[in-house]
Amino acid sequence: MSSEAGELPFHSALSRGFRAMPFLLRLVFSVVSGAIASAQTETPAAETPARSSPVKFSTKEDHRNMMEQLGITRLRPGPSGNPTAANAANYDEALANPYPEWPQVLMLANGDAVTTPEEWREKRRPELVELFEREVYGRIPGHVPTVTWRVKEARDGMAGDVPVVEQHLVGIVDNAGCPEINVEISMSLTLAKESKGPARVLMMFGRTPFDPMPEWMQRFRRDRREGGGPGAGGPRGPSPVDELIAAGWGCAMINPASIQADSGEGLTRGIVGLTNHGQPRKPDDWGSLRAWGWGASRGLDYLQTRADVSSKRVGIEGVSRYGKAALVTMAFDERFAMVLVGSSGAGGATPHRRNFGEAVENLAGSGEYHWMAGNFLRYAAEESSFGSKNAGDLPVDSHQLIALCAPRLTFVSYGIPEQGDANWLDQRGSFMATVAAGRVFELLGAKGLGVADDFRKAPMPAVNHGLMDGSLAWRQHDGGHTDAPNLMHFIEWSERHLAD
Image: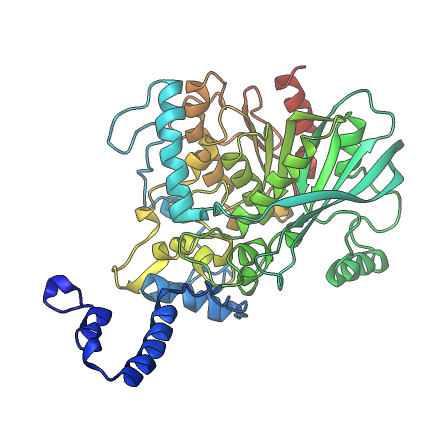
């Protein structure tokens, strides 16, 4: 207690009777008192707080932890992809639009219309980025460790009939803050040996040619060879790398698994776990989609240092969950010049507000929630401290995510259900979202799809008939769950719009 409160400080109170003590007692008291004073005035060395050991959660435990942080006691189950299940997904277009009013893409939060490119860039785009980060995909923390790139291996090869040089590039992430977790980003770069100048490069999410082939892939290839399935025997067709090199481009492959695991139990490992020192996520922390995008951005950092790469003409590509990641990457990192979004479905180009195939509840379930921010689970809550929420409560949707790519080149690709690009992905919904995003491309001086109809009523083009006259493109090919049949269309379309 202070002297202002009527009490004397410790040393003042004791000194009052000090002179009355016998000499010997005073001597002893002085020694003891001096020791006490010395102990009180010396500043102890600051102790470094003990760092908690990295947590090892199962997916179930991590999912439950996030629900508890959010105050959720029950999530609604998502629809089933099994058509005979009691909760089979809806594929009836008459029931597909329970939330017909989508969030306005060109309206500020205060209700004002966005009418100029400046208002988009300075006001509306930042609003949308904030909402997507907080509610859907999560924020990348400001203290993510740095990445140092090195060329691990280089070798000569062939892409079709073109001699190439393949390099294995490794991005080593500084783990001084949590030595128990190692992250080394695996990326490859393939360029023609006889290059005619800096090459455009398409960065593709997937395993690099230097990474070990997973057992399931070895088994699949073995079974296909021995069983006479598609592609068994005879010459193989050109690969995406072959097509890119033949067109004078380069190809970078970046392995998502080397950045962040594709599972909930991996969230305390990988770059998310390393940044959090192995501790569980907070509700607005990034998920795997954002983490894979972060890795792609670090790969772009490296590519921009290369004299043999046209640094302002680097694109990003992915299929399925990596199609989601490619769209997210493009939306947030404006340095990417183009994107090929392959069969991305919910969490990608497909609107959450559609009741057709995969739903918010599937993305919030234990099999997929790790792709998203923890906060996203709130929109599948059936019972919680804040009540119940659904897709209609989301403040943003996929048409606005596509709009964040404007005016850069954005190509949305799908196949057909008959060949394996399942109805689950909702090709029609993705087309609607692409049409709705076109208004932003046009505001920024680029051409959209050229579809004048209301996005709710616009007819889809015929299969193999692309809408590719503008900076926003759509094409549904007649293949399956791949964007390979659209790659050459993407290359030709990009070259028309990225004239040297």
